[in-house]
Image (tube, rainbow, N blue to C red; front, side, top):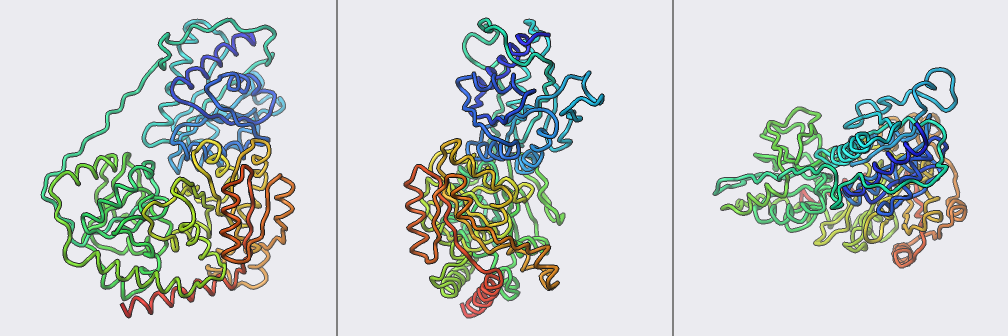
Length: 566
């Protein structure tokens, strides 16, 4: 084996990935990964994003893949560097995000003999990848070049295929790791520039006999891979069929006349629940975050049907009786194309009336004083449709589900809700900003920002523009909603975990603009200025955890009173 052999094979691998459609890759520094990094950087069709650490690189790649819907590659050196990619790989697997993970490794003879920076990387991510393969790059024979091109196609299309997810290629590399002379020209690829292997998966065309009626049905919609295209279709279909649409903002379907914005609040009201028992439930995408919605679904003794492009078990309560495996847009087109009889019983109207009452009660309770729920509601009103709103897990994503309004043209909403962790949130938002289109706004809590504070380095190093709206309540505000909140000082120190951080210092350290917003007008002005700026900005809104808990309680009481009167 020579360095030339490794580089010839890696060049063919990268060329083939580019032919398949790979446009973005993330790198981090190291010695053993040198041949992989240089091969990616020298491929002109792939934009390489440089990162200091692997965890940020992995989550940046995740955000870029979410924003584009295409596989994104991420590479790292050997040892614990590869282990630092594990959180992003696990999130990608559970959220169905296509990643191609290229880990450099020591050759077999250096494993388990005390060599430095060497761990067992074979199937390092276990069942959290769709496919693992250890790639030999020892002899660049014509047969080996042909094989590595096939391998690249398999990796790309496996990652992209339904359900999408991460694949892991482990590449053991021997020294020397740097070329001593230029490589010869490569003519091993197909002359027409096409991939070595193409994958054709025809989309099924479901046929639905009509006429069909949807009496007292409900659609529950969460995030799913086709959200950007199916959201508008789903909103229009529900309105035409007279079906209440309980759509998480991440579904892209909280729009149109059938969308019910405040189902989380409505389903906390026993009186409303008792009067609004459906006959059918159609579930599309992931289950929304709302605990009352999940409990309601678990208690319904009615037929529940899931619809999606792949078989995904999103049924923790074992209440789904039918899984329909088909692209959502194809099924909607087939249903809309037949004879459809809209529900004229007043079913949708009763949901809309209750939602309107809840909307008024929430607005009156919130007023114009800045609060965490008000920020979630206002971002929906203020952001243009071309924007992407990236939302941190924990409390921000729950507030967004509860208070985000129904809009005709909402911004795109993304969040790392596969494994529901807060790690890597900043880096994922920067990934969406780098690879996606339109401005990106991150809504995050203070603990999530502190957890991924190194992700802010992407602002200056990569020249990216991101608007970070920080809800700072000095700790984990969500835990005040749990029984553990009654445990006094132990709760405050070990669960709520106040930190006392001054985030203006972090903004200055990482080269971001900073503003403290204390009123609604100040917040809106700061966001508008940030969206027009080529630089990243951190806009801080300071809140109080105890007051936030009390505000949510008062909102619940106000909604219940308003709905009972409607």
